[in-house]
Image (cartoon, rainbow over all chains, first blue to last red):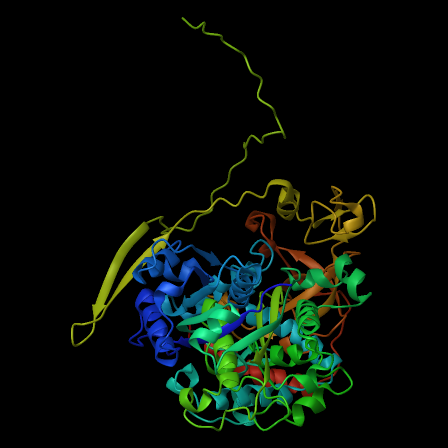
Length: 416
Length: 222
């Protein structure tokens, strides 16, 4: 029987664009660790026996192996370290790797540092850097950047599921407004306003049906979390640790157009799926995580989630892939605001990528930390109020997502 | 004293190595490979924080290897696909080995595809990467060429952005031969001859409303 995997703490820098006071990656990582130590003073740097670094694009920092800069700055020479890179699912993949390390029994205390410094180039150049993760031979040069690929997928998905622009605007406004209760969130720090569905509808066109406010934010940010054995969790945070009861990781094609008739999907789910519209790797990795955690009815058994809302449209697509709604009730599920903070399954109470920000390598770690805070009862301490606290949260889902749905992971976290 | 033995060894060859004889350069004037160069800096008012500006420019050689026939085909105004001789699946973008696990990485054959396609899905972009901003708004479609099992992304020209429709028939149009560079930008889609847009409807009106400011914004770009 594999060992239990636990999370005992974590913190992020403020997520922002431009000057934040946390510009140096190694300094920012150090401050995240110090904030974590304020929550769990028993945790010492000497306890770390493996460091996993979660970073997407060396283009942004203009530095190969930048994790080496952070690692020795932390005083950790001698401790094993490596970097995980898996597109937008880098953070989820790092959590997966850390969990495997604990489950195997080889390591007891694994630190994950995730970061991205996307403000080192212009926004349009950054969009192009990120699009280097699409198949550059075929897609980048024809105007392709990720919002465009996502818009093409979402346009068809929304029509098939009878979801409107206004419906997904509900999601966009929800997450940005949730971020207004979170002082580290980029939306709180920069735009700093509550918005309505109309504001989303009136924001500028990015790629139909996606407008500016349907999009996540481009961010500089760093995050740190500790994944450990249950023995260590009981030592440093006996009353507040969280267990990783389920996890799944799956993959799909790099080019969205290649998944129409993909034989391996046909073998798993029958013909016609995932088409160009469904996130098959999300469904597949969620099924793995649910099975491992013993979840039969996710809508009833999961209390909330921190999920990869790179676009409001993708959050809706993720609801479906997670099995929370299907084509018969998708629009109603959104319109009934089931995922608002007062709904039965709040999604992204921390603000998500739309509100907190999306510094790629740090994103999945940020989602994990927000999920941990909810389960550990730390929201009143970390957010500005109890408004974004999920009441009596016992079970949360963390979702991390890459490419055009090319790599996706899901984790079920429970309060110990 | 040890005896020196000279052995003639024959190198093992795994594939024919190409010899490149046809070379074209079309680098725009003024593009220089500067490598790494600091080109400026800024310091905060209280002299505690510094930002430096680093410029980096580098020539890459994209070696297309076994995929080359597709890109050479573009220079010739052809869309080359591949087909699995075992299961018959056909692809553009190409695959040099079959994706079907039962075919166990069967090497595929080259086939010339028809210059016709069908829209699978579409979007109208009002924002893009740095090198595409001036072409906005861009109608990007994922279209299925001939009997391909996959959809390929490319721009749809010759249409009002709000008129694009699912399943509409397309033709593939190449740039004039002298302008081609062997990249997917050598061709684009246009509506098939004789295709007529459907009448205006609320969705089309909505897209027109979203796109109009984009035309104005592009005019302001230098």
